[in-house]
Image (cartoon, rainbow, N blue to C red; front, side):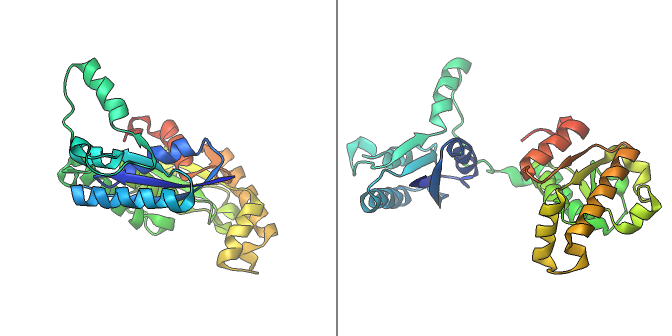
Amino acid sequence: MANRTVYFVSDGTGITAETFGNSILSQFAIKARHVRRPFIDTADKAHQVLREINHTADSEGTRPIVFITLVEPEILAIIKGGGPGGQGVAQKGLVLDMFNTFIDPLEVELGIKSNHRIGRFDGVSGSQSYLERIEAINFSLEHDDGQSSKNLASAHVILIGVSRSGKTPTTLYLAMQHGVKAANYPLIPEDFERGHLPSSLAPYKKRCFGLTIDPKRLAEVRNERKPGSKYASLENCAYEVREAEAMMRREGVSWLSSTHKSIEEIATTILRDLSPERLMY
């Protein structure tokens, strides 16, 4: 597996550069050292990053890969090497200009100029979508792990499943990324003895979505938290998973296994099945 240093350089947060860059890099068998350089919004900062990239190339003997999302022409010219008017030093990295690769042809196609707005989140803090995300995050925190059944009627999604099956990180991702009010409720042995969903969830069964997990993986996760306990034993994990899946089948609740899926994959599947109008960014 090849080793390579990868820079993510942006005049904003760098989230776009890193997200897109990582998606591309996942297609290659390389071991990457990530270097994040956000808020590169002055010529001095740009020259400093250029020197750092060149030093990395000299010391490692290979060209760093440089993903950039920069809109200011002067800063862009510096990072690409040479700087305005051909001044400065040559760029020793492989520069992948992620904005202009798409912006230039779109300007031609649409017949209008880009507004060259710096930063994905510029001015977003007062927008309605931002306020909805904050509200959704607060809701998910209040309704984490079955802490509260208050206002469940306003939940877009209610995740159910055994403890440590991935419910909490999924609900928080849904809230932060999609503005979804997501609650989660752990299924416990008492629920299995009753043989049906908890009464507080029954009125909202159509909003429920289940997560399950391979018992061996569940035992590994639980042993990290409570090693050697009955809670973490493979026998108990197998019992809880079996009973939870049986309950979800009886109740007609859709579910999937989180064993080999990322949070992003889980969240997208949930939204596709329950709230497709929320599949937006």
